[in-house]
Amino acid sequence: MNAVHTQVFAVGSVTNAMRGRELLQKNGIAAFLGRADLRGREGCGYTLTVTGDTGRAAELLAAAGIRVRSRP
Image (tube, rainbow, N blue to C red; front, side, top):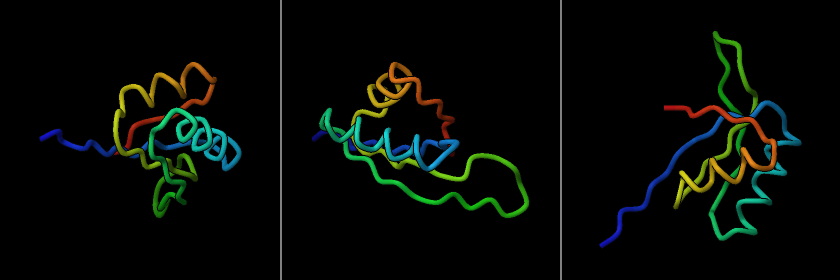
């Protein structure tokens, strides 16, 4: 049985989050756009929750110039 990995990436803009979601979905990786909870801190306002090959997702996003940060 294969474990399913889920990771949340912080994205700086809704445009990049949408671009990232589309890119990942075209490559067979499930990705969901969300709004980040920013109470009491600065940072990215949007998230991409990725299920599947999260390492490959990070590579695809980086190759497309979409900067992300992993969130715990």
